[in-house]
Image 1 (cartoon, rainbow, N blue to C red):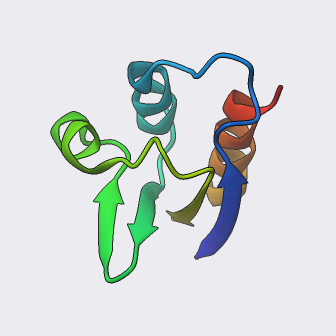
Image 2 (image 1 turned 45 degrees about the vertical axis):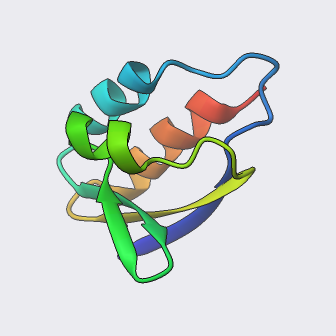
Length: 81
């Protein structure tokens, strides 16, 4: 399992949530964002709409599976300026 804190607000314009979900779904590993004791599945549109915190500057992402390093790099690239 790979954990990575990412600054999701370093771009001048935020990325659409569907871009994040589509990118996550293109990877074979499980991808979650953790908030305290709960986790949000990044591949689940409904869960992301209800629970993804866009106000926080940083998010703690979890990657678990065969291509977790690839997935981490792809997600990180989305938030790069």
